[in-house]
Amino acid sequence: METYSFLREFADSWMLLFLFVVFITVVIWVFRPGSSAEYRETSSIPFRYDDAPAATQDEGRT
Image (cartoon, helix red, strand yellow):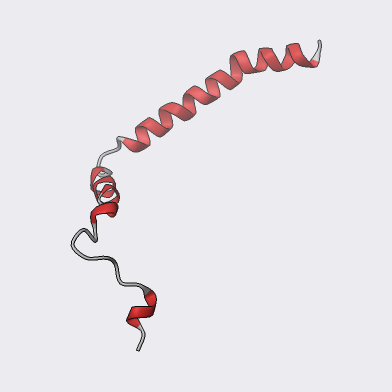
């Protein structure tokens, strides 16, 4: 059996199955119970310092 034929057969069967399982695992991980609070906090990062700019490290030193 040629290398190309072997790799193509492997990609068509087992790699497809593996990538499908990885995709389903990621979807389940994202939509797991209790994760919405974490994602809500992460999504608000760009708006944390909406009123004033964030203090730099040099401003905090005296």
